[in-house]
Image (cartoon, rainbow over all chains, first blue to last red; front, side, top):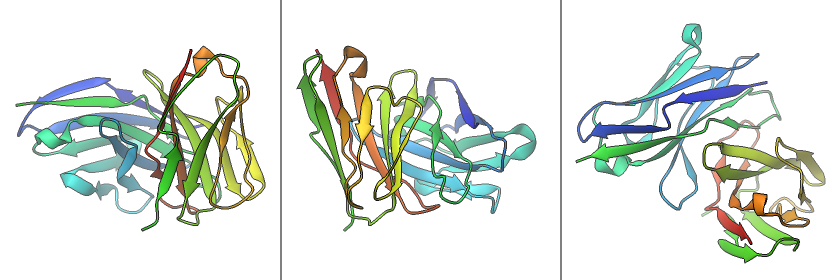
Length: 115
Length: 111
């Protein structure tokens, strides 16, 4: 069974500051890992994904995440926060087996940007 | 452009009524999924399908059913709505090993 833990249900950062959203995973097989963003009253959009290629993954809107197997982590970062980054962010894991596409989501982190 | 749509976007119903939420995708994806989103729980998988006539239970399937008669649609039925099923429901689709695309969601209130 797979699971993800997102540390911090709410994170606030100042505009221009570093964004760091934490995600730790548990998986019995090599995982596929994802970060999704949800803007108010909208569905989820894929930010980036790790599928066993490069451990540093670059996504949209300046976000990136690094897969660290030794730490079982996949933290999301952005060097400089913008007001438009305010949203809820979800980390998710899949076991990546062919035909088994179920995602297990974390409980989400709401990011607030302080002007 | 291909898309995934859900209807209705908002629904109010009464306890005990049967409710069906529609999900339609034009990506021609084999895989379709239903999730519910609740505060403090993130998204939890209700049912999923890997192709026509295939359906599977997720982690919170009690009180819900789905059917897959074609590639494009996966309707979700609440057999007898309960207040505990008040939630936001998201449909998603993907190709095998592909990115998941999510619909805009249906907000359901059971009174």
